Length: 321
Image 1 (cartoon, rainbow, N blue to C red):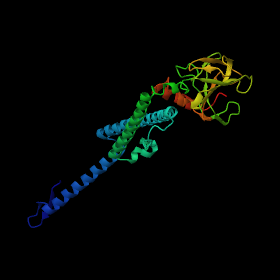
Image 2 (cartoon, rainbow, N blue to C red):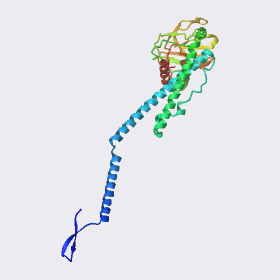
Image 3 (tube, one colour):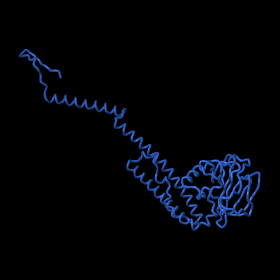
Image 4 (tube, helix red, strand yellow):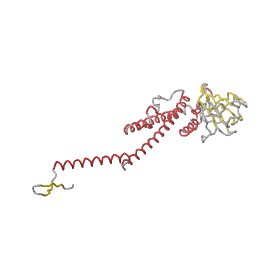
């Protein structure tokens, strides 16, 4: 701070002026306030346009966390779908064998009822943790439920061994890789009319001449020969359990009406009567009503294989006939 002087007329000379304490304090205060405001403005501008190392680290951590939660959510949805599919299959098996529902379905809660992680930005960390725990508990309960059903099924198979022979429970063609599986029961795009139409069975895209096998013991109810429509076909009645299976678009037929057949017996060969690609159209009927063949492959598919064949079938939006 520059020194100040004033002229003394009595002494005819300049004398130094010492600033007062109040004036000095005021100037210091103004200087401090100004410095603080400049520093605050600088910090605000810097923080608005630039991240500190700590902020950058936190942002990376949050990004990784969101990515991990998204992956977890996808895996959960897939697992929930698999459990639902297995539940449907096991329930159908249980009803087929015991003519009764397996147990209370109070655990069959839709995933939408407990939310998902796609809108997690609306929640606090605590709420996300609680919702994750709810999802985990739900999956564990569902898995335990399916485990109980499976244990009940396994313990009762010996008692139902004779009846089981007459329940269609294998694929009608050799399909170990599951790649031959096509569209199953449901509204599918018809290859001829290019519009949705009820598909009453399941397609298996296999080469002409592939062996077709009976999926359960039974009696041949009808054999029809035709070069148009559904082509050569076989209908097998599986006895008192009121099951019926149908095998369409055959090239050759090895059995005749009234003949007894057993599960795994070759009954014909796949043909190609002008369809889109050579394939077998296979149907299951229960009490005269259309049933989904996917629910009756329990003798040869484990849960992982069942998950895959369901995915393959569902992804096929177009039937082959």
